[in-house]
Length: 320
Ligand SMILES: Nc1nc2c(c(=O)[nH]1)N[C@H]1C(S)=C(S)[C@@H](COP(=O)(O)O)O[C@H]1N2
Ligand SMILES: [Mo]
Image (cartoon, rainbow, N blue to C red; front, side):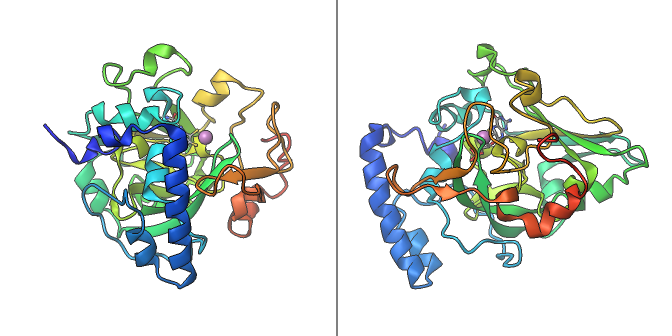
């Protein structure tokens, strides 16, 4: 059976990388040209491999959106990290379509007065959806600009009524070994686990995300729902969420377990704290061509005005 998620695995798309890169660069330039005229709609139309899948329209939230030009649908859906499906950037687009997406529920429990299990419909209807254009900055020193669709995670967390013991929020993501060729490779401990302090998770920027480019999330971007935490390195933004647990102690996240010296619990984007094996001072913006100048990485990925207050008095070189 053909599903909308066949994008990314059509034979026409299995094009040698240098060829599609140069074609994409041309499309990107066309898109930037129309953006200069202030015509976002044209920019989207200029993207030949444009948005696909079920529509999930929502008004743009200008307050929390960057006005930088978004990456193309193609960039966003073919250059991915989703290690359950392999470590190659193209693996998620090739294999994530195998994931079973129905039925899907998220269990929210732990230090809460009202534990809940909600299906996808109930989750989507919990609060009005908005489009938020966020920068996403990977620890690997590349970045993108992505129009996500969702609502502040705080709307969901308030529903369960956290108790006084709830100081951390733990996210657990889907584990379907039969559908996920990366799981047998043992790069990480599965399921993928991430976490935030409760006040970070309650910050309005932390987005419970159901869509991208006005469409339901494709599998490679974490269908059917994920978290996006734009001031932290990309790995904090857990995909294909199935569980949220509130607890008193910080969890040991998958990346901390894999390499504690390299990946801290906070993982705030910080150009002043290098990864032990490379600098974090600059980043490559995907889609701008591999020879275009690197951009300076900003503290908290540019969201410092909104979130720096969460870390007042903390030594962010020690709490990296
Ligand atoms: N479950 C799960 N979530 C994950 C990952 C993963 O491997 N598994 N990779 C993370 C990393 S390292 C990044 S950079 C972002 C990438 O999101 P994108 O592919 O939608 O750009 O997802 C994050 N969420
Ligand atoms: Mo990442």
